[in-house]
Image (tube, rainbow, N blue to C red; front, side):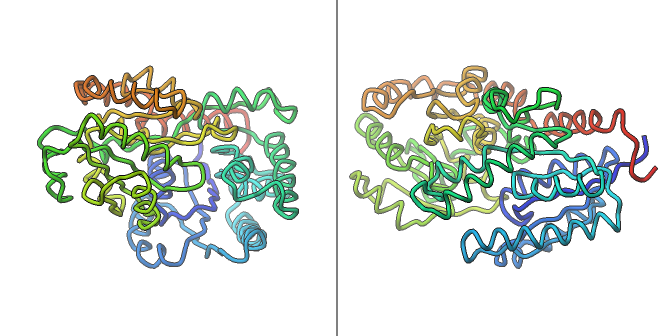
Length: 415
């Protein structure tokens, strides 16, 4: 089969943490299989300025062409339509020049252009859905039902969502729960293949944690070695349940007085500290640090246990938290809540932690009682079982299989 030329469109930036963990590693891997990528991305000014050279070195080595455009933040809503217009203009120009065999669209805004490219040029449309984006915006409070403009925007994208599904040559869902829900929609066409590929982790980057590394990480962060470190990784806000996680920590502190709360996050430190203070958490028992991609696994290794609570709203059926695969890959046990994608099934399969059905004091007390057992879990065993689900190499192979299925009975645009 001749080399296939693919236009990859993403509204996320390659210089974003997500772009570095959930876009580039896959495409670098697929490039080794003979796929020739051109990436059209939208970059935030500050991150682009500080990370563009790093990203450029990666794409050049992989033989990937990168076309970065500027992400527009304001005004809300209108900026998205403006960026979509810029995306369309550049994508159409690239298609006329390169005659791509397929357009791989990451999420909804990119899919808008994918459908147009398919209808105009006959290019294959690969819909990497990621999650229920419009519903995430509403569930997260960004698009409120009582706001006339946001209500119309939500309805617009739900209508467009149906068009994406009906015009796709292949669909990727992050979770089995999301796929099952999608199959109940009137807009779903069972003739269109769907594969489930969770947010994978680079197992070479997120290595297993041993006692020596944990001690060294605590030392690096200025945390005493005898502290029981409960960590949280990622953003705070929207559907992340900060108050509930702080309440769990205060519950743990009642029995484990050496407990220490570590946030590895770029979110507002003052906000986190204010909420912690309201829960009676002393400043000496909490630390908030920012980390780039290289620093994340170094700091996470300080953890004895990692916690993550995400609001179990409708849109989260399709959510695959990137942090879950990364933390389990490091052999660190987790405490999470039910109702988020395939999380409960994953924890049961890996034996890598516990799942809480609610946020009651009773559930928190049960979780606290399980801490001695969590600390006895074998990190290597957690990692080995997690690798069967989250290993980046498995994700790359699944994408490769999906690509082959799209092209199996088609004639290349370039042939």
